[in-house]
Length: 383
Image 1 (cartoon, rainbow, N blue to C red):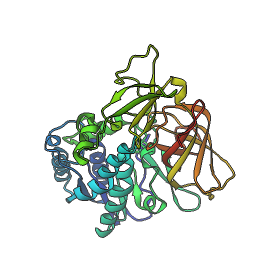
Image 2 (tube, rainbow, N blue to C red; image 1 turned 180 degrees about the vertical axis):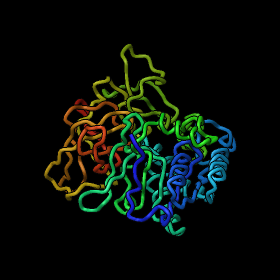
Image 3 (spheres, one colour; image 1 turned 90 degrees about the vertical axis):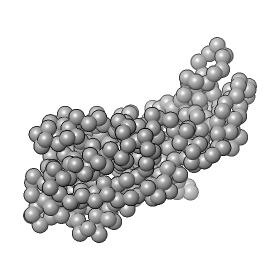
Image 4 (cartoon, helix red, strand yellow; image 1 turned 90 degrees about the horizontal axis):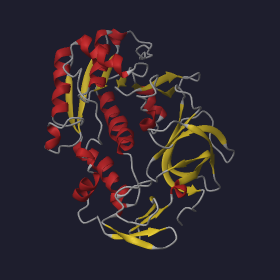
């Protein structure tokens, strides 16, 4: 596996590259590699939030210690470094949407919104203002020039590190200027390069939590953003029985079994969240099976326009699951519909359904969308 080329016709010495530096090992290695190859490199770090405690919290990004780490790496490499205060943009475009989605009974992916708006819209505009030819990031995904001259997005060479699921909303115009130099490397080689360059972040832990949710306590963050939003309600069986009470729909996710605090003698799972009526609907595991998904906010990166005629794809409904065979089409009102060849469990509104041209490890990303509604084998979708 080798470094993914920037794929530019210009001489590196005449090419200005802005590197999005989060303070972690991946983006730091990108900056070091491009500097070594002779590119004019400018480091940019976004300050997205400040929890106070996050300044020293391991596994975070884009605040406090991470900004300091990015600055130290830039100084060691001898490259210019800028810190941009994007806190208000991040709050409006990511954190507020995250809270609203949970309160609507969904399970959102804030990283998708962050990439779609703050990073690949606002930061790209800043890179252009700085006269950059391209913006490089430390994402594990592959960008490649297609036969028609456009840039395509592909899964990373290392399937265990692939981040294409979180980048499906990247537009063709954005892809034209984005580069992902680590797409062909395993993480172990990236860390080895960090040691070779003598970077102080070589052994730094990877980001794990949602960056603005310390310790995974997302309900606490939502309560802070939307005070009084956690309203109690009923836990209801699919057959209509009221089995207990809950302290807020936002504290539950589709497929959840633990923490229901109800005793029925049978294993029950959260199968639907009725936020409007403050109900958590539970049922047997088979009620989680989903065969059809309706989407909103779709981004299509394929070659031919979609129509009512089904297109064979591989669909991925969770970042931790492999793509599986499916059909994609538009219904009579133009809504994208994904029909799964075999049922998936625990598919939740608010999550992403990402399309690939095959299930292969290096498959091309054809786009994706936000899951709006699902249809179950055992239970019809809520009206």
